[in-house]
Image: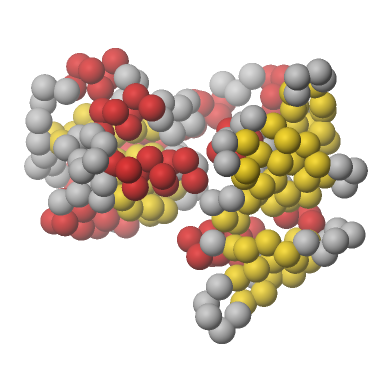
Amino acid sequence: MESAPYSVLIIEDEYPARMLMMDYVMNCPELKLAGIAESGDKANSLLTEKKFDIVFMDINLPVINGMDILRSNRSQVTFFVITTAYSEHAVEAFDLEATDYLLKPFSFERFRKSVEKALRFLQESKQTIPEENKNQIHLKIQSDSAVFLLPFPDIQFISANNKSCVIHTTQKDYETPKLLKEIEEKLPNSQFIRIHKGFLVNLSYVACLRYDKGGSYTIQLKNEDETTLPVGRSYAQSLKEALKL
């Protein structure tokens, strides 16, 4: 099995169970804990902002329950493992394409089996990417009157604008009625990276990374306007790694 690490989100409102899940994840070298949510609304917010490979999720959550989260976030690139003390939702969970269903209390050995299953599915999903997408060199943007093919090297950054996005290129800006997460899934992650809940950037346009005394980061781009963009604290480390800093 390829070692990644793969990003993990834990959705659990009970403190002891949450700490146990964190311990289990940190004892798996293939996994990287990338997010924690204690309620359904926080979980939905994180799932909108970032991409996760595997999600371990309880069902009985404040505000929004786990089954509703599963219904609204079904994705071929994110694999959900249900962690619950109740067995009655198992059939529905598998109907909604949950990867596994862990009944509490469960051992680390049982947890490992779920991890291995999810990693196997992740590898299979990469191997079944349509051939025409493997060599894709542009982003397709559709408007009311035309379809634009934007070459990846021409895209400087993408910004969120409510329920749409603006693609900033070397020639002009293009607005599209897509969420930032949807655009992110169409871009090569070796070239583009999320730096903030509202911004994706082409790494080749990053001129410098600045750190201020207050603990926040910004980047400046290599473009005519020398655009400055904020870097969210939760994204700073992955940006540093991508820039080899």
